Amino acid sequence: MSTARDVLVSECVDGVVTITIDRPDARNALRHQTMSELAAAIEVADADDRVRCIVLAGNARAFAAGADITEMLALDGPALERHPRTIAWQRIWRAGCPMIAAVEGVAFGGGNELVLSCDIAVAGAAARFGQPEITLGWMPGAGGTQRLARSAGKSMTMQLVLTGDPIDAATALRAGIVSEVVPAGSALARATEIAQRIASHPREATRLARGAVLDAYHTTLGDGLLAEHTSFRDLASSEERNARMRAFLDRNRATS
Image (cartoon, rainbow, N blue to C red):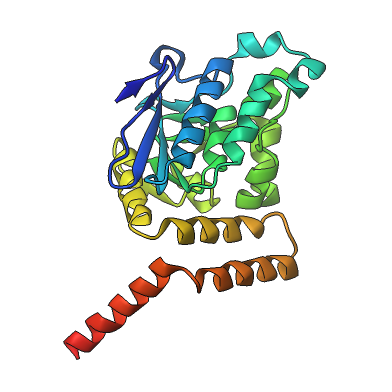
C-alpha cells in the first residue's frame, strides 16, 4: 500500500486497483490537493497494462462530502477557468479504464459528481447523495447537472439541484445513480467483486465496450451505432478474442 497525503492507492491485485480518499476528519472533502492526487492516481492506474478496473472508495462516514468550502470561497470565475482543480476533473474524465464507486455515507456536491464520473456505483444502504451547492448560492460545476440528468432524468435532477436536499440509497437506485444497494459497510466488497469480474475479461474489449456505452450519452444514435460497429469490427482481429472463442468451442466439443 502506497500512501499519499489525501489518497491511498492499493497494489494491483487480480487486475484491480483501489483508490481510497483518506481525509476522515474532513468527511473526505475534496480539497484541491485531493483532486490533484485523485487525478494522478487514476492516470497512473489507467496507464498500467495490468490494471483492468479501478475502484474508488471513501470510508463508512463519507465517500466524499463535496468541495472544501474555504478553498472554493477564495476562487472567482477567472481563477477557476484554468485552476488545477478544474484540470484535475478533466484528467479524471479522460481515463479509459472502467471505474466503480463504492459509496458509504455521504456523497454530496463534488462527491456525488465523482460517483457520476464512474461507470458503475454500488451504495451501502445508509449512503446519501446530493447536490447542495444551491444552498450556498452556487450550482454544480463538475457534471452535477449534465451527468445527473442523463442518469436520473429531468424531474429528479431538478429536485436535487434546485432544492439541495439529499436522497437516500434506495432513491438513488431507482433514479439510476447507482446500480446496486447492499448492506451498509459492504459496498467496497461488492464493488471489488464486480471489478474482479470486469478484470477477468480482455483489457482492450472492456475499454472499447465502455467507450461505446459512453458514446450513447454525447452523440447521435447513428454516430453511436457507427462507432460501436467500428469497435466491434476492430476486435474481430484481436488475438485474445480469437483465443477465447476457440477455447469456448473446444469446451463445448469436449462436453458434447
